[in-house]
Length: 389
Ligand SMILES: *Cc1c(COP(=O)(O)O)cnc(C)c1O
Image (cartoon, rainbow, N blue to C red; front, side, top):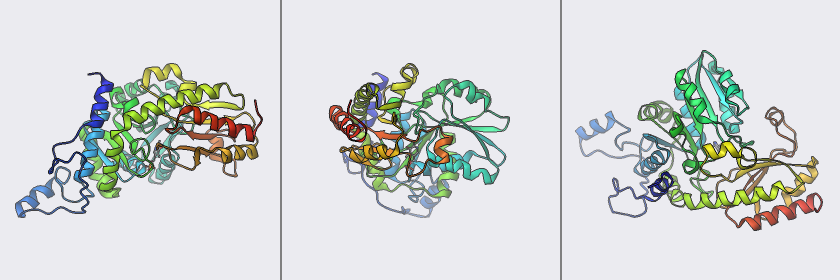
């Protein structure tokens, strides 16, 4: 069986281990706590809280099913699911960062992740941001006290990809832990553990959930590293996923392969149209800007992208956004619906300038409608806001 077919099979498999009633759909074990039959059982359970069901802020059967699926999809040994992507990211960083250590942050990472890293400066953790996908620049940022390289590839906002393998090779030699946010690609299109990354992070609120109805996150890695996160970042910070949300994430995973195929087909069609429309300036997406490297590192394309407009008038930008009929205006992405989010919200912020974002930088998420209808919509909104071509 090919790697791809194996991943699809994993998305569809039923977990029979915990399946008391032989249900096809996972049971939602909506409980805070679990009782022990007797004193001896209590002792056994308490001594290994992450191997037995004791309390849902430790382990829960529905959430554990999701953990097993995600771990297998990413090719890891163990997974921990959290109440949100940020729950997973902050707990993972907090587990491994030490006072006096340094972290290299690669790419325009998710904005709240960046805020978290800036916030822990007060615990004497320093950081260097490398907004380059050239591994020479990334490696040049490594200092003697660097303990973590944190990557996002493709990155938020600019969707630039890096050659993960080249980074992890050097990191291993220098004993530096590597982490990557793999939300954009999903394990269908990129499995970073196969390229030597130590820990893979996900916001399951996006493609994995897939229906815009949950907030959930996860980390996947080796048994040793994930157990370390469980003991500290997970148990103590308490970002617990509701068993109901874990159920919805598993339900989302059942259709992840077919949804990702559609997103992949749609984004290529949309970009092919956009390249020929002179009213669009830059297209930020690996298919548009890093095709060669994409073919080496990605097995398909996610449909989150950004554009800038040729005309830098923000009143026209506003008109463009307001006249899109099939896009909802708002944050988040990964569901069935298309979404649009301009970076400029009445102010050309310092953060935008620092990240090298144009005043018309606008994020677009291409949903599951037919590409020709999405393209027609973008065209008519541009016609109203700018000029007909
Ligand atoms: C949304 C997102 C996150 C944060 O996840 P939440 O589930 O919203 O906490 C992290 N990384 C990326 C790339 C995201 O898009």
